[in-house]
Amino acid sequence: IDAMCAYATLDREMMQAMKDAGYYLLRVGIETAASSCAAGVNLGAKHNIKKLQQVLRDAKDIGLKMYGTFTFGAPGSTFASDQETLALMEELINKELLWRYQTSICTPQPGTPYYKWAQEKGYLRSENAREFDGGNFVVVEYPQYPQEQIGQNYTESQSFYDIALRNRFRHKSYESVERWKEHCGSDIKNGKV
Image (cartoon, rainbow, N blue to C red; front, side, top):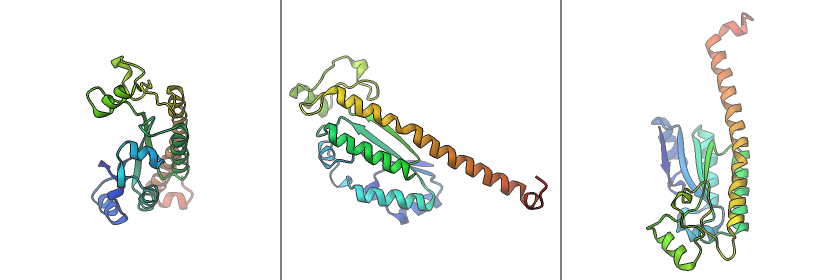
């Protein structure tokens, strides 16, 4: 079983109970490393990097896999703040605290308050509905954060997929070898395999 959760509500006891109940993966919305960007997307008290890191360490210790989501180009973000997010991603992936992750380009969907705000401020750079997909096109630009730079940071975030995949493959290979050893049991010790 997997579930989407707010990491701010998790603690070691709750995650252990979830693992015992059959959960193997929790998806958490990390979104950004920067407080200014967190305020821009109304994360409030849900944004706490120290708490996030503790939750991820606890999850790893008890064998619960974690999946994190990140966004680039949100209101309040800058090139530098999204670089902070990239640094956080790299740290969490290199420490194997995230099993998987996804990234998106913060995209104001028509009819939402974000869209109306971006339209009123003159931040929309496209009206083409096909470009509002959150993964292939940047449709906003802020005075302090050009469209091209948002795209650059998003593209850089994709480079971590190779590291994360290599980490997962290494663990899966180890788990396969351990299962094989269990299956063969005493034959390995007796040199029969």
